[in-house]
Length: 141
Image 1 (cartoon, rainbow, N blue to C red):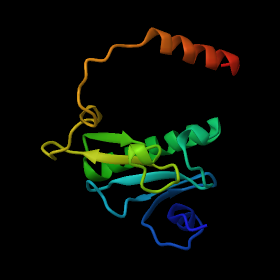
Image 2: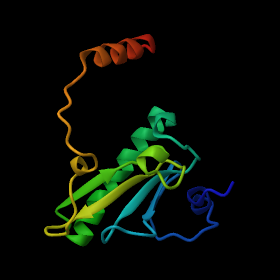
Image 3: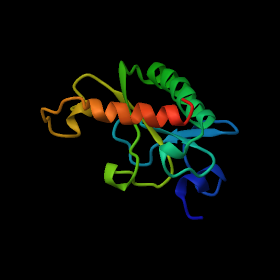
């Protein structure tokens, strides 16, 4: 497998590691959008976030909180943008789940996640809500 994140997890590629345990690792992004831009990735190869187990998803976000607290203190960052691009259509550049933790600073020129798509006067779709509830109910959720 030639996945760069799997290769980092195996020690085959260098990365500036911030945190690692048996399930997750975090390292500085190789092309940071801000000082301290970090990635949090599962050690095992999982391509899409909907393929994560509940344990993997929980661990990913638990580590994001731990790393975020340390980055905030180290950098004096008053905020973060936290994001996950899922699938090629969403801009996922490496087909391995990875959570972006981007420190934010006053005047950094960045925008919110709401700036990703143009505002359209969409309304919540009650039929979609019903279908999703039915699917979750069928799964015992």
